[in-house]
Image (tube, rainbow, N blue to C red):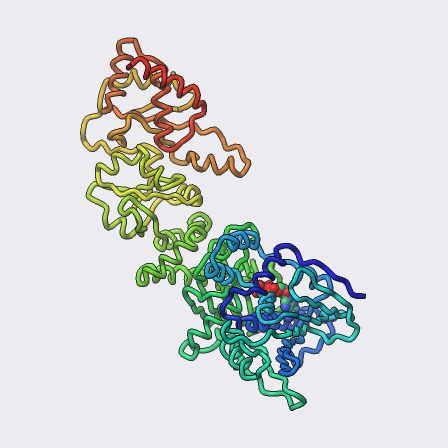
Length: 613
Ligand SMILES: Nc1ncnc2c1ncn2[C@@H]1O[C@H](COP(=O)(O)OP(=O)(O)OP(=O)(O)O)[C@@H](O)[C@H]1O
């Protein structure tokens, strides 16, 4: 019995995009279908190793391409794992990929070229068939199951499903090709030469044989060379091959930013081919973000997304690790404990850090792309990977008061440190504009001390965990005691004022003291080392958690007329508590903070101003 089912809304939108395709390189549909076929063969081989009861013939696993010039069809067939009816509905009828909704929203606003770019970042997989076909049929049968299913759609909102009794195991996708349209770079995919060329270009490294099926003749030789790229010497692999391999493992449609090779001999033998992407994956900051490294054992695919091999902060690294001495039956849990995997992971992390460091040193443009796209994730390692903290710091870049638009490395920062500066100073906050103008920075600027301006959310967190870089302490200029006063004498005669203000403002601050960090502002607020910063407090609230109450320290500028005037008044027993409260409110506003009771503040201010008229 046949049933008609609606595509999920997001899937429908994506299909529309494919049908009215804005993607200029239509040939890539074949790469996508072959990539899926290859994955299906990997899964079947693995299942047959792991499940001895699964009765499947794995002696001739392959991908076939069958063309019919008259009927204008192209069939892409694999004898891999196949899909059940429910899997077809779930995997083909819906898009579970995270970031879909965001991407579709962006697409709506994007110009055509940008939309193409978005597709390129996202990857569309199976749906790309609709760029070249006006109808697509699929017959699939899951390994181990008796019943197959026939799927069919024109991509217009619905698809039909029908059980098939005698389907061969695996998946066959029949494309009813659109007419050739050279202007729209829609080639004649019913021609063997076209298909041969595309396979050579995009899928040559696929380790399974890809064969053309021609009428009745003996099976042809595979049209791909089938060499596992990671096992071939570097000199034999072209950039084009690396790019296509990257696309296969990453599902990215763009070129990788950088390629890395890994190999180990001796106790543990392994090889790896890893990539840095040129843009942040859509799911980089989503909870279910996947890690991009696949595990192979002696050329046999074992798992995607092998979290045991890659720490979370490097989740954007894509590629393959092939280990020689693991069992094919390993589970994810066992992997975490495996000594070999732990050793490879260590090497992998080191390799990635070295690569990023080398980019930073030698290829500033490439490094800039890396940093803009992936730096925020990378910095998480400062907190989560203490063993490599120094290397991560060294490979990072930060905005600073040195330049309005160029980031600095900590090494360059240190080289610029003037005589007398003992720490690397930084300030965290919500935006560059707000922290650049915050009073804390005044005296540092006056002294010519550079300050790092850290505005990413993650900066609020790692800064507490990092105490030094290469022997130089790192210090927040909004926390702790700073002594920028040099050898000058401490201003005297303020003690009573400080005690009085401390009492007046006891509900809001834990201490009132004199400051050496201010030159033009009367007051600022600082925390103790380890205190939550105001931005961090806000982040807690945004996550629905009530942070512990943190009172801060009010620092006064003894050189400011308002402060010295208040001291004199207080000395004469004539100080107005409202002025203390206004000073506190001003300090809060100056750093971009929020007043607890803005109305009271404004009323008090208006009243005082009135007296001056
Ligand atoms: N030939 C096939 N054999 C078995 N399963 C398949 C086959 N083709 C697709 N699938 C299943 O359908 C899912 C969706 O495929 P699709 O090509 O849309 O996305 P994808 O390959 O997961 O990712 P991407 O869109 O980034 O390429 C696959 O993950 C796979 O589980």
